[in-house]
Length: 174
Length: 111
Image 1 (cartoon, rainbow over the protein chains, first blue to last red):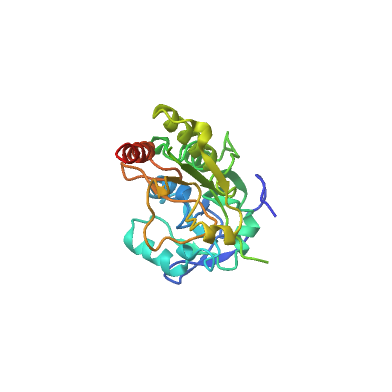
Image 2 (cartoon, chains in turn brown, blue; image 1 turned 90 degrees about the vertical axis):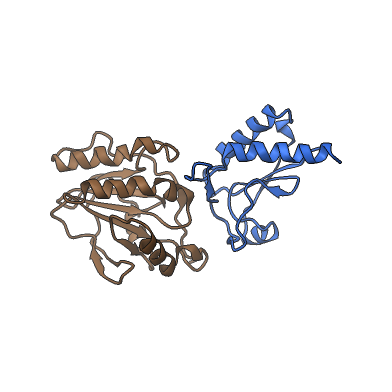
């Protein structure tokens, strides 16, 4: 399943690295869901830009980073390794573990990173990459910021969908 | 003759850019870009056989352009590189590739 722009975001809950459960479907404020991980160079290259967006918009929107990868085959994405990163880095949003991969499946996440912006009514308004180039920090996650600005203004983002770029989500064997 | 190997996995989108960068670096160093030995790594078994720690992997005369840490995980995955300015990247720093090519040619000229 893949969410399309205009679809209602699924109502799902996930635990963060400290064990606190967060409800991704609790609406009323804009929500940003970022599928990401520890081992992907694209996710790492965009990480600081995404944390900066969380810092800049954190008083007006909710942010969740979600790691859905199969940690058995990719041990760098284990909950323990996630905790190590949160403890050692400046995270501006909770880092959630999608052990069952149900949330990634419900959103139709394809890559890490893959970014979704949901409006206060629970409608998906943006999906895609943070900006046009993982290798250019000056782009500053501009596509995500544009989408958030629009949603906060009650407008539809001019650029509602871009191609997610990154490592494929590491699905568990069926 | 300098032996340049390029190992890649289809699941990581960085290989096309990395190969183009490698071709350009070889041309600048006077090497034939067409001589690159490219090998697709598409199974876990092949990854273990090649000690493949991610795509892309570039070896020059058998030596990795940015040798992985000892506990690097062998897998079908994207490889994490560090650029010289400290940033993370899915492709190696072009200066690392250039230096590795020059080092290999220098070693050959002293033999």
